[in-house]
Length: 292
Image 1 (cartoon, rainbow, N blue to C red):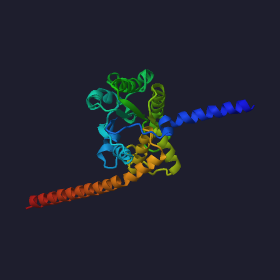
Image 2 (cartoon, rainbow, N blue to C red):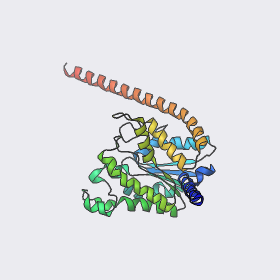
Image 3 (cartoon, rainbow, N blue to C red):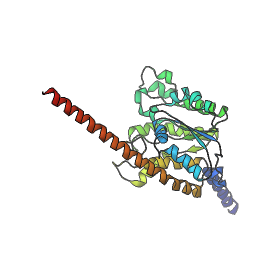
Image 4 (tube, one colour):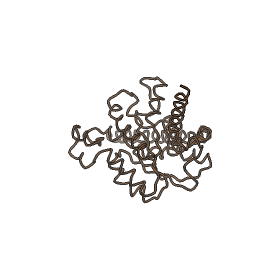
């Protein structure tokens, strides 16, 4: 009995060890000084760089706060799906010769419906897609090829599960997204590459907040608000090996970026209001002239 209990304890300890990952337990940040990280993705990643407090900016600031001076290679393009990311992989990632590449892909493959990318050949045959679907291939093939090409070029990939399509977790779109994310988890395990399971983190946070009808992590159900960007960055930094103390230091560095983002948003709103007022004044002037 004692031997059985001991063996069970060892098995549990091994499981816990693997679930945290070697880098987490050794407190070793995987990215080193001078290395480049490419961020391949869609509009979420494009915004993650374009927004002063977007998740890409937060990841880089978090590394910097912990003494890692790395360089970002932004490679997010709005609306892109797995086939388009594969098509531009050489130009936007491989040619830049980064040491790391995060891959955030899946939302548009599902969200675009008939113009989307089926998970596999079975879905391709059974789904309702447009006439060009065969040209786009399947998600499994596209993602696998992206990972394999990056690895062959000496780039270390980090897989990000797709976040959410609207924050109503039991809706149709999130149900369709689930097998795509399950494939990513399986691929990361098979290829032995880091995984940032953002979908699991988003689901946990949205359920914990328990605010039906309220956007907790996104501005529109898909694209990140401040909290969503911070949660994404946290997941990526964990996948890169930051421990709790290092994450706390990273989060302290985000305050300045959040202030910059708020100031930028305020200026943008003022510019929009000014443009609208000028347009209205011009229209009023034109209308007055027409009545003379």
